[in-house]
Image 1: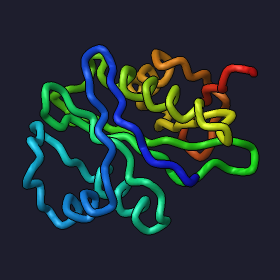
Image 2: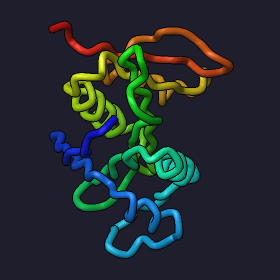
Image 3: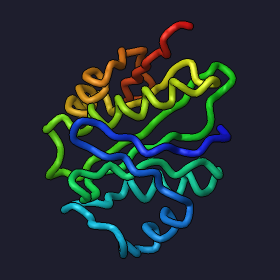
Image 4: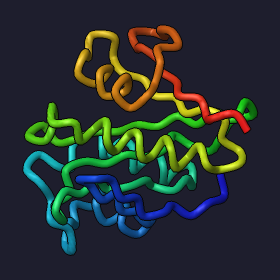
Length: 160
């Protein structure tokens, strides 16, 4: 996926593209220049950023609320031969259950599906993680199946 991430704005959130340099700083524990919300970054943040840096993928977006980083979202790599892109996302605990996750995931999916090589966006949640599954459903994803303890969701790009 040779693209530059765009700044995304939703009614309540601003999703700020993260550079590789910024991702390396976060992994090193350097949050200078960021106003981190309580509970962010999480272990999943570190895992996602490390994966992006290892594969050379864009590190994703910081999900901000009023200038405070409350979570992050990114891809698991480039679009596959089937036009599918998988995303991962996470919010710090104090910001969950308020619709921020669905708002951010929908914005990222819609942006990705405007890229010519993307025909659908996938995301997974542990089968027993009902809140994360609701995030995906509210963001327009449909259940596509189950895989090794995960519920796999997909949102298709509009035809045309």
